[in-house]
Length: 74
Image 1 (cartoon, rainbow, N blue to C red):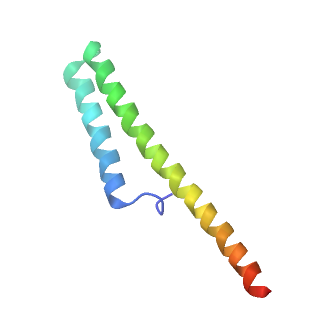
Image 2 (image 1 turned 135 degrees about the horizontal axis):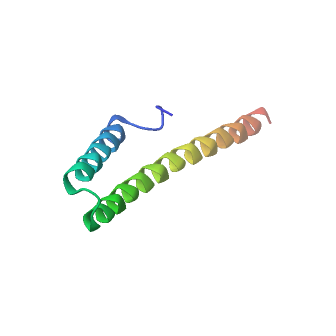
């Protein structure tokens, strides 16, 4: 999993999670917590999309290498 996340993504994950925890303790369970949770979930969704794109690109690269290998054999 580490090969799909760069240092920048890991920093964003950690900072977003820390800010969410801080908001939880400073705001308490109020209406503002829903806003903070929404921001946190959007950040998580963007990170998940980046991960899935990375995995998908890797699979496409592997298929292209296979096709290239088949073409070079002929």
